Structures are given as structure tokens and as C-alpha cells.
Length: 404
Image (cartoon, rainbow, N blue to C red):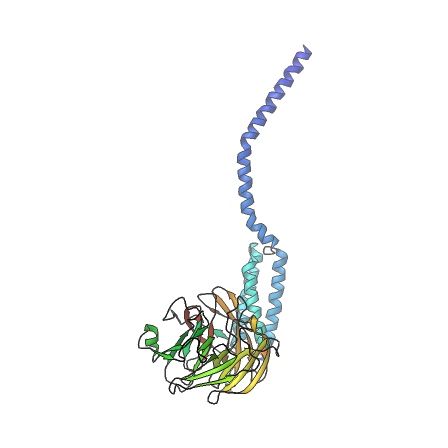
């Protein structure tokens, strides 16, 4: 009897175990689905954790950095109060309040806050490192902001022409004349410049005149590269297949040439994100002069700035900078100050550097972002008549207001 009872108990236990096993097997798919769902939901938080974007310790470090920047800006404001330092102090106070709110709510993602802190720090360093004598030949402060595009349109010839330049005659006393130049031979050469007598005509692509600078794309006086500028009804540009500068007077049809010692042919183009071929020589103009920006082996590939006499077409002064030209996407001149830009992303560029030819001072901590509609920059020039920047952005033409 005892043996029979033990056998029955074993059978009952076995049946119970088998029932639990069947139930477990039935629940496994549901448990697996739940686990996958939890894992997927935690994945984003895992990224934040491993990247240091969700951590109380990192939040404390961020708060400490904010305090240091605030102290630095406050000291600068006490020594040299201006609108920029006042705005920075207000924005830093707001950022500190946002960090305190993160502490209170115990919910934060530092990625956005870190970018915000980086931008504030760049602006703080710009204020801190800017010398008091950095006032340019116009006795004005350095550029502080660039507006959103005030005008955007395709060039008037073809969307396939991604290299060129455009703008307005840069001579202060000149009439309202707009110009447009597209490189139509492999994005390298051109021999005409399109002229408009008003902004309205330019916007409507009407009443223009195509001025022939050379008889063909391969003529010795043809244009090479996108570093072209119009000053006093004269086109200044790099001559075809040489390290020389040409000037073409639209009224007299006369062409002058001069050799630019040390400048190469496609040796030192503008690059940074990707190189823009045939941009060794960049002609710019401000209210004082015509300028040529280039690089030489003697200066280790760093940018050289020379001032030109526009009538005689000779160099009157030269300055050497410490800025490597291939780390730059474009340059322009304002009141004797060289500004340089770099790539940020597909739709944003940034002015990050300035060199004052009056004092020899260099600043590489500027942070003046501006919008674009395509990755590549072919030409960027400043016009002293209206204070605008003119950008040839692949096939698009954009203009911006500037603030000092």
C-alpha cells in the first residue's frame, strides 16, 4: 500500500510539473515580445548613458562650465560693456535656470544643452579675446551677426552651373549695377559677365547685357575660378591657366595683367569639407581697395592678403596670416579686415576667423553662423555700398545683411 501511494504522489507531481511546463511554453512568446519591447525602449536611454548625455555627474559638470563662462563674460562686461556682452549675460542666466529645472525635474538630455553651451562659449571667447584696437580702417567693431538670407534665387543661366560669383559694383560712388558670372566650362572657366542696371531687373532676369571678357573660354584673358569681383565697372579675376590677376574694364574693353608671385594653380584651393577646385586666387573689394587672397608655399600654405591698386593693377601692401587656406571654405574683406568661413553642415556655414590688416591682430574664435541652401560655396563677397554679403551657393544666389 505504501509503495502504491508513493507512486501515485510521483505521478501527481509529474503531471503538475508537465502542466507548469506547458503553461511556461505558452507564455514564452509573450515574455519574449515584452522583453524586446523593453529593450527597444531602453535603447535610446542606453545611448544617452554611454554617450554621457544622461547623467547627474555630467549635469554637474555642465553647471560648473556655465558658471565659469558666466564669470568670464561678467569680467569682460565690467571692463568693456557692450551689447554683445549684455546679451550673453542674459542668455547665460537663462541657461542656468534651465539647468536648475533639469535638476528639479530629474529629466534631462544634455545633447541640446551641450551644443547651446558650446555656442555661448564661442561667443564669450570672441568678446574676451577681441583687442581694443581691433577697429579696422573704418573705426568700427568687428562683425557681430549675419542675418537670414534676404534674397535667394537660382542663377539666370542653368542649375547645372554650380560655380561662379555675383554681387553689386563695390565702388561706393558707383551706380546700382548688379553682376552675375557663371563658370560654364567644367566649372573652371568663363568668358562673359552678365550685367543688370537695377535690382528689379536682376530679380526678373531681364534687360541684362552679357559683356564678353575674352573671345573664348580658353583665351589667355578668360576667367579661371570663381574668385571674381566687380569694382568701379572693372572685373578683377584670375587669368586663364596662370597664377596671374587680370582686370577688364567694361567701358574701355581694356585688359591688364599682373603676376602674383608665389600663388599656385590649383595648389591651395578653398576646402574644409571638400575642396572647391580652381579657387587659388580670391579677389575681394571693400570701400578702401581691391584685395587678393591666396596662399604660398613660402607661407606654408597659409593665407596671404595683398592690397591692390585697382588702376595700376599692382600690389601696394601684403600681410601674411597663420590661417591654413585649405581649412577655409571662403573669405571676404570688410574695412581692411579679412574674414574666413568654414563648413558646419549642409545648410549652415560659419564665420570663425578675422585678421585686421590695420593692427595685425588675428582672432580664430568667432562664431557667426549663416544659412545656405546647398553644401558648396563657390564665392562669398561683401559689398560696402549696401553692407550685404553675396553668396554663390552651388547654383543658388543668396544675399545677407551684416551687423557690427
